[in-house]
Image (cartoon, rainbow, N blue to C red):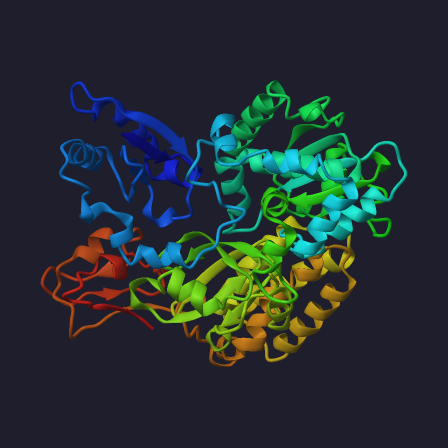
Length: 585
């Protein structure tokens, strides 16, 4: 019997290492267990995840496993009693819907193979695409990628083949392939999961790209906050070199290519390709004007092809199965599949990979299981800090690059943050604007000063000090910043504000004109009140109040001294549900 434990970052955070360590104590006397680690299979909400693979090859997946449950599960399988249905993921919360609606290309191996084993990757078909590519001409490889319709999955959606072709046609003797693994969007973890769960597929995709464009060196620019991904990438590079899959004369083809890792310091702007190149060269990460594009003049002035992790992860599948097979999925303008990170107020948070053209409603409700605690859906923030907020009225929009852009959002790298009725859209816009303002490199006046000015206005609105002219001023500043900023960070920074103004203007107006927060989240515009008809004088709220602003004798009605209240919400949280004496006004 084989026991497979998900040891991605999400699993480890949920306690998977304790489950892994408990495995050696769980086997019955005289029976051996084959242990295997793996990455995240996307069901982050069910972590820690454990698969039991019996002698017939049947796989039974269990969720929310702890050492005690593990002992029960293994005992049931070893005794012949069969799987424990109560813990199986396929019977919990309709998890079958989560998996059955997906089509996995980039994530095809994540959660199934040992990411630290080259043998596991090769048994799953790994490096067959590289072997096939080396029998083709570089131009034939590019044509296959062109046929696939693969567009960059890092945000801009630029045709991958065109980048490769443009770099190939340069006559410079030195060229580079760079993998952008500087994933910095709040709530996004697509690239991290691929690197942790299937690092060899990225190496293989980069090597195929190197062959196609005529490069001999690849660089993975990975954020230092991903230590597990960096460790597994390092192991994968080492094992690939030892097996002749990196280095000189790969597979006796005469083609040589090697890869190294560069750790980034976590600057969000370095996700922009020219800022990334500046950081690689030891300079401050700041974008530059284009053209020339990196494919003409990139790293140290040499032609450089830059794609992100997910883009490279698709390449081996495309070479193995043919570009036409990839193009058969998706829509006319957006081919193939896309990985999304579901986060926020959603029942099944995690990673999903679906064909382009699926609707937002299908992702959020059919796959994601809908909104937590039975709350009402309000919006999905699509595309990271430079993306936009899409309301319920547009949930049936098919996901492709053009349609998402028409709503004021962007495809981005694939982050989806779902918010419910309790979310203040003005405050949500403030949060993302605060992020981009802090991450601005400062090179553009429009981005450096404009985002600061927008943030000042929106903070004033949240504080109940907004003026009627603020809405028009926010829209004007947003347009100017979008049009005049140098890179995508500045161009997209106003999007959360502009889309919330477009779809939730009434919330801004309530903050400004009525001095009220409809979602009851902005502290300056709310107060906590104890209902005299419901309060029994149990004193729980008074005991837990951190500033002692709740007064009243035991078994008598209490009241909150508003001038002392810091609006932490503790009284609301601790008031027993059977009384519900505390409310927010």
